[in-house]
Length: 320
Image (cartoon, rainbow, N blue to C red):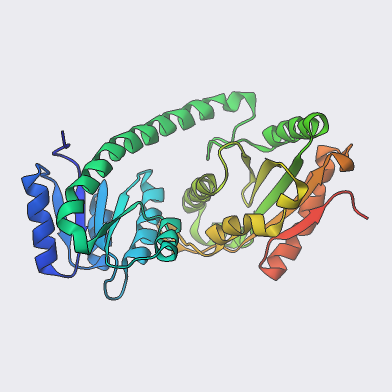
């Protein structure tokens, strides 16, 4: 049975289309349906109260459906919420749809088959939204539980990530795994270039909010088994184990670099853009033995190169 209280926002600059969609949703039993005639109006509506499902036209003036999706994802980051985004489109082709999925769109409805596809797609979103919101709640509880482990001095209380001590333990474990099982280790240092200036300009409350946002963004971009930590007020670090050392290359982490540098963070001070540098140090069993501290120091020396070039800087051990 549909959840009559599922929050749905319909965004379409064509009044006839909005009316048709609204009528179909109401007849299906959905009671919490809101409307916006533009992406800008939709963002204002979502600022007041999030929606579980967003139905938006892909082609709209000023801000199209893809850009709207990106803005919605920023709002979601701020609110620890997930909005299920369905775009209404007449566009076809795998490349077009692949780009949209990569930009955060969840599903599509073909305008040519609107009457057949609308309700089944919304029903599917309805079922998924219940699961997504439950998982978000469980994740919040998990973060709180992890923060309670601060007394063991392994967890950063602000972000719920590991801290520098946790990083050293995991680096040692990962090096032992490479030695015994093969494969490769890739250690990434992530620096926020203008962190100090932003901190001084906006204060502690804002900066803690920004760091929390960066941590959430990174968690969305890395693999589930990767080890992500916050080192200090301007640095994060990542440990990832790979099958082959050739995978530890700048191109493998381009999406991570772009995710921090090209997408602004929604904060109480507005949208804030960051300049982040990423450097990586990779090794396999041929480079062992290696001390965790030497990995950390090599990466720290490499970070200025990433800041200067605007690209991911890389180094493989052993040095020739």
